[in-house]
Length: 185
Image 1 (cartoon, rainbow, N blue to C red):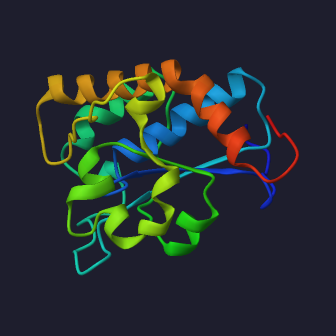
Image 2 (image 1 turned 90 degrees about the vertical axis):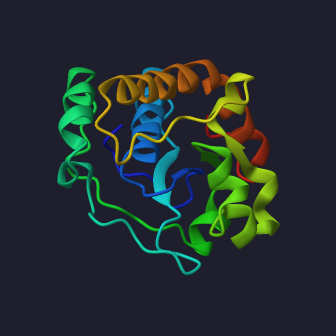
């Protein structure tokens, strides 16, 4: 899954608040699942809503810079997930427009915050879903940002992994349905 993807490849965009924890983990797990299922021509990226619509961007650019990184990074390493090169990226209109599917970690990211996706980009609402909706549920992935509660970190991580696995077939189906290109999956 390290091969370069074409700009024409369908984009799955994972979004959380700061693009430090939940959305990069979601993206990493979806890339892993694409590899397991030999799906090569799909791009999976992540962004955050902090830093837009008058809000402040995250204090740091990576999970390793935050105190709570000392809890989450070992959990990720144990699973083979490496976010060491990941840096915060703010969501942009161009990325939202380009994405075939937008997966959010929690409902507040999609609709209730002042800088929520539906408030900024209402015309793209039909392609915005909770990650849990892909698995037939309607649950928010808890935000572990700012918390030193190891149980919360474990719960958030396990929820992302479980929802991505359970929802992967539906994610692939949504990409197929929304793609105007030939089948790439």
